[in-house]
Image 1 (cartoon, rainbow, N blue to C red):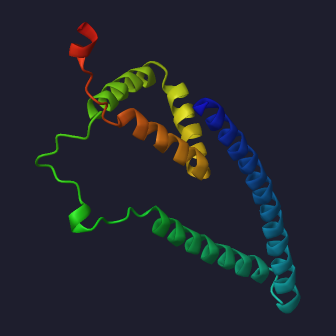
Image 2 (cartoon, one colour; image 1 turned 30 degrees about the horizontal axis):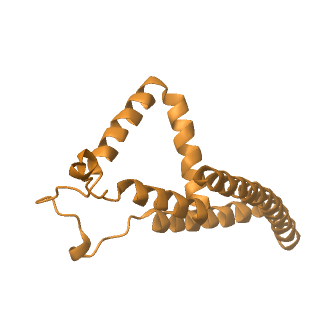
Length: 160
């Protein structure tokens, strides 16, 4: 049941990614026509043949610098408040951390054997998880269920 829900969420995320890709292509075309219109407009108001190229280049350089600054702000890691910073002392780990560590070792070995497949799968998983809040919620619920402490079994009752 969980796999069907994850597959359905992946299908919706794939459709959304396709639509976003098409929208990006349309916006890229619109930007190209905008730059061409700017170039033609500058050419009509100036007398020197090189000035439209100069002004267009300067405009694109400013836009590029603004985009680089925005990317730097977005990619900057958030700073944790002092009370939320992880402490090195006394970290025995949550229940199930040993299982996660064992799975990490297995995954690391599989990636060492097939690095191209590992990179591809990691990229696809990152895009899917980053694009779909539903996939994030489903995977978080599955992780919580897997890491939840299990009640101790009472072997004495089964013997009598």
